[in-house]
Length: 191
Image 1 (cartoon, one colour):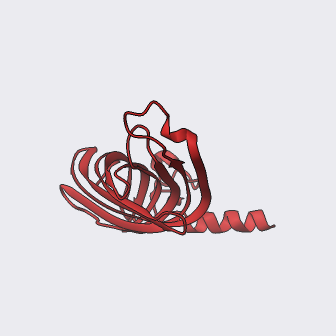
Image 2 (cartoon, one colour; image 1 turned 45 degrees about the vertical axis):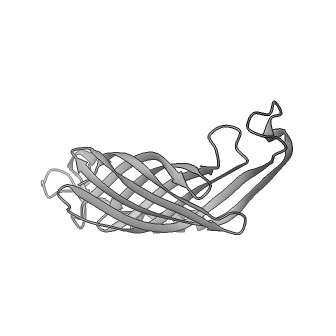
């Protein structure tokens, strides 16, 4: 009963709910002849980028769906103080909800926040950059998983299915809050 109720709610609230066109030939919805009930635009894109972060270096990747002005993103982000022999690495994986622009001819922007799983590692350091001792071997502390509040702001210029822009991200959590900005490339249906 509980599963059936959850499934019914998911179908009723789903932005991908389909209805049959009035062709007069069939009363069963067909994917080939289907459209969203409200006619709102649907955008889907994936993106990835690297750049600067509160720890030094960072990067992120996301899969986003926009239905009308509503944006849902699955996002992962990671920050580190150095690409090699780092002393701290933190990352999150989360789902974010927000709003985005609709109908921009050459640009797109959105802002979202949500909930994420945060984890990281703090590495002790007992030598210099030129030391033969691996800094990851001394006093390593794993942190998490913990709950975090991720956020993102996306701004892109686009041509066809390719977009280039800036992606500002962060995560507020009890262990090590972090943030960053990345030069980002996105691919997908952007308008």
